[in-house]
Length: 195
Image (cartoon, rainbow, N blue to C red; front, side, top):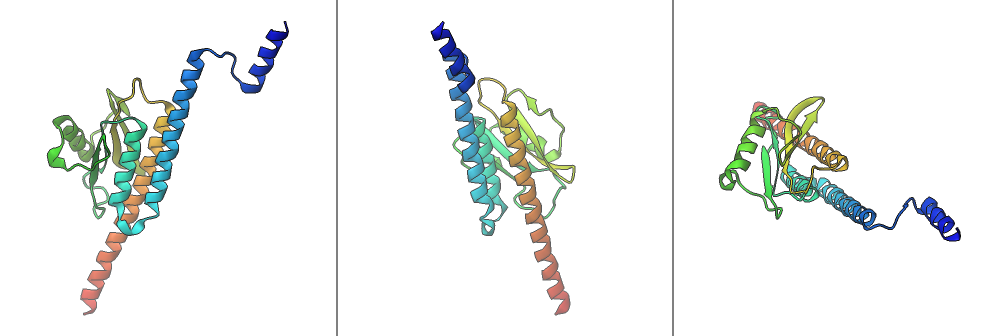
């Protein structure tokens, strides 16, 4: 009886009812995901304050963070054709090691997904191993964050929340870059007219 009471007291204090291995495994998985999330947010916050490097570094860092979170073989971040016309670069693609890759060296299935992203094709958020999160500015979809995940199952809701945060950071960075570039262009034209 005393042993049962001690187990109940421990359960109330810790919130864990059993020492079975399945609970521990789930705890370890959850802890690993949380650590990946914190690392992702940390790397993005460091990239966001390095504004002199332009949006490419931020976009690559966001693609890397998304890829790491979902154990991805490929991650890409891009704008739809015709949206934010002044923003550069239009897209970034990183491989499983986090290395940026050019459009000319992508496998066919990755190149096809990038073309679909740029054309603005509508897709489900999760389809096969692809996870797609919209980049939105004032309700309008301007592009997508797309990840080819390597998880054993589907991404958890917390994973998708992190991807939405990353996509929002990317959208703001790209919008800021576009506003800056259009301002530079207007200043240049004003200087020509003044002369």
